[in-house]
Length: 257
Image 1: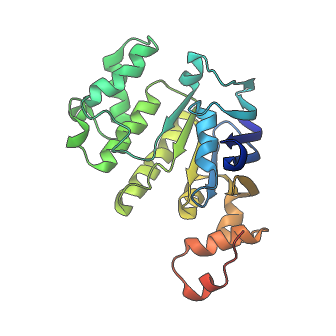
Image 2: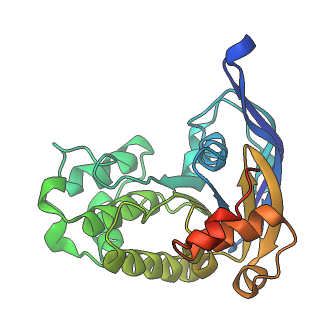
C-alpha cells in the first residue's frame, strides 16, 4: 500500500547543511501498521511530512497503492492519505465548532451528505452527536485527539499517518486512544504509519518497525523481536534499555551513536 525508497531530505546550504533523512526505505502492506521510532531529531517526523505532502524538498520515491506521488499532490491524494498530528490543542481551530472542523474537508472535496458523515464519524470515535457543536476549549485533550482522528477519517482514506498521536495526553488517556485506533484499523482495514519515541506504544500498535538514528534506518524489526529483545544492532538495544526507565548503571554504559 505504501513504498518509500531511498528517501533523502536536506535542509540548508554549505556549512549549515543538515542531511536530515538519508536513504530511508520501507514498505507497508494494506492493513498493516508500520512504526518509525528513534530519538528526537532522528528524522522520523520528517519522513512522515514527506509522505503527507507537508514537506516538498525531498528526493527519492514514494508510492501509494502502486502509484508514484510527486512534490505537488493532486487533491485525490488527500482522499487516500490523511494525518493525525501530535498536539491535540494546536491542531484544531479554536474558533470553529467540531461540526465546522469536520465539515470543512467534506466541502473541499465536494462529497455531500455532510450531516450524516459527521454524525457517523463522531459515533465511530466514541464521542457522539452531543459534542458536535462544542468548541475545542470545551473538550479534554483526549476528546480533542478523538476529533482529530474523526477529521482524518471523514474522507474515508486508506492510509493514516500518525505523528506521536498520544504523547501529549495523560497516560490514563493514551491507552484509550491507542485502542480506539486499533479498532478503527481493524474495522476499515486501514494502513497506519506511526511515528513514536515510545517503544511500548509501537510494540502495541505496529507489526513492523524501522529504528532511526541521525536520519538513517538502523534496522527494521518486527513486534516479536522488540518484545523478546532479540535485536541485532547495539543502538536498538540501547534504545530499548532507555525505554524501560531510568537506570543509572545502564546509562553509564550508553554510547553515542
